[in-house]
Image 1 (cartoon, helix red, strand yellow):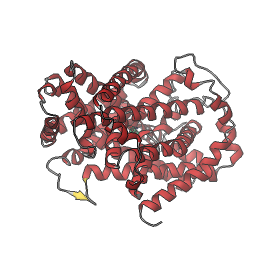
Image 2: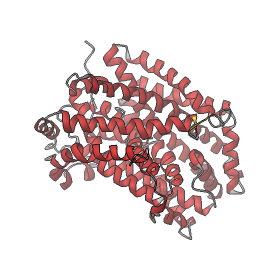
Image 3: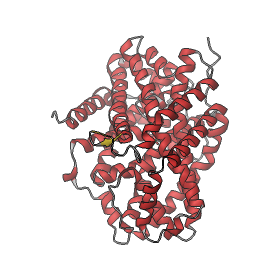
Amino acid sequence: MSVQREQWGSRIGFVLAAAGGAIGLGNIWKFPYVAGQNGGAAFILIYLAASLLIAFPILIGEIFIGRKGQRNPVGSFRIVGQNRSIWTSFGYLGVLTGFIILSYYNVVAGWSLGYIIEALRGVFSGFEDPLMAGFHYELLMANPKWIIGWQAIFAAISVTVVYAGVQNGIEKYSKILMPLFLMILLFLVVWGIILDSEGKGLAFLFKPDWSVVKGKTILEALGQAFFSLSLGMGAMLTYGSYLKSDDNILSSALMVAILDVLIAILAGIAIFTAVFAMGLSPDSGPGLVFKVLPAVFAKLPGGTLFGVLFFLLLTIAAVTSAISLLEVISSYFVDEKNYTRHKVVVIVGIITFFLGIPSALSFGYWKNVTFFGLNFFGMLDYVSANIMLPLGGLAIAILLGWQLKKNDVITELRKGAENIVDASPWSLLSSKVYLSQRFNNGLIWHWIIRYVAPVVILLVFLYSLGLI
Ligand code: PHE
C-alpha cells in the first residue's frame, strides 16, 4: 500500500485551504457577470437562499464523506457508499468534472495574470473613456497567442505549487495574502459606493425585480452556489480527506461558507457600483470584470498600482482554487492507481492545458462556433457548473440521507464537534458559536440533506427543463 496519507498541519490550515479553494474566480469574475446577465438582485437572493439551504448542508456532507473515506472522491464514495458502483460512479463524475472545470478555469485565470502585465505597462491609465477598457479587452481576446500563452503560464504556476506541496506553499501564503485581498476589495467597495452617486448599482444589486426570474435563473443561481463553494465534484471531499477523524466539520464548513458568500457579495458591490457609474452594461458576460475594473483604475489616483495589486491578488485567489481542482484529479491517480504524486501533477497539468485550448479560442477564432447559443467555453462552464455539480450534490444528499442509517451518520458527524480548538483571530466565527452547539446535534442538517436538498435540486432541474 501507499505511504501514510498526508494531513493538515492545523485545523486553521484546513479552513484556509478550503476557503482559498472556494474563493476564487467564481466570486470575483463569475458571480458579477452571471448576476448581471440574470437581472441582479432577484438572482442574488436566490443564490443566497441556495447557498444557505442547499449548498452549506451539502458542504458539510461532502467534507463528511472525505473525512470518513480518507481517500480521493472515487475511493471515498466507494467506502462510504458501501462498495455500490452507483456511488463510486459519482466519484468518477467528480474527477471528470475536475478536468473540465480546470481546463477553462486556467483560461480565465490566464487573463487575470496577463492583466497584471497590462496594468504594469500603464495601459489602464491610457483609457480616457470607460468604453476603451472594453475595446482593449476585445483586442486581447482576438489574440490567441496572448490568451494561450498566459493560460500556459498560469497552468505551470499551479502545477509548480501542487508539485512543491500544498502545506508549505499555499497554506503559508494564504494566511498573508487573503486578508490583503480582502482589504483591496473593501477599498474598491467604498470607492464604488462613492462613484455610484445615484445608487443605481446598489439598486441593481439589492432591489429585486422578480419578473426577470425564469427557470434558467434559478438553475444558474443554484449552479453558482455550487461552483462558488467548490461543491459537488469532490474538491471539498478531497480536502476533507486530509482531516483527522475527529476534526470538527461543522464549524469549519460554516467559516468557509460565510467567507465565500461574503466575498461574492463584496465583489458584486465593487463591480456593479462601478458598472453603472461608468455607464457600462451589466450583462456583458464573461468579460465584465475585465472591462469594468480597468475603467475604474483609469480614473483612480494611483490606479496603476491598484490595478497591478488587484489582478495579482485575483490571480493568487485563482491559484488556490486551481490547485484544489488539480488536487482532486491527482489524488485519484495517486490513491487508486498508485502513481507518484509528482508525475501525476505534471501530466494532469499538461492534459488540462490542452483541453483548455478550445475554450481559449472561444473568444476569438472560434467565436462563432456555438452550442445552444453558447460558445465552447460557455457550454463547458454551463454544463459543469449548473448540471454536473448539482448532480454531484444530489448524490451526496441521497447517499447520506437515504442510503446510510441516520444514527450512524449523526454519530459520525458529531465526532469532533465537541472539540473547541483554535486560538486564531478566526475563532470568533469558527469555534464556540452558539449556532454550532445547537446545530451540532445534527438533526436539522440530516433533515435538510434527506428531504430539502434532494427535492429542491430535482425541482430546479425539472423547472429549468420546462417540465414543471
Ligand atoms: N470555487 C472556485 C471559485 O469560486 C471554483 C471551483 C469550483 C474550484 C469547483 C474547485 C471546484 O473560483
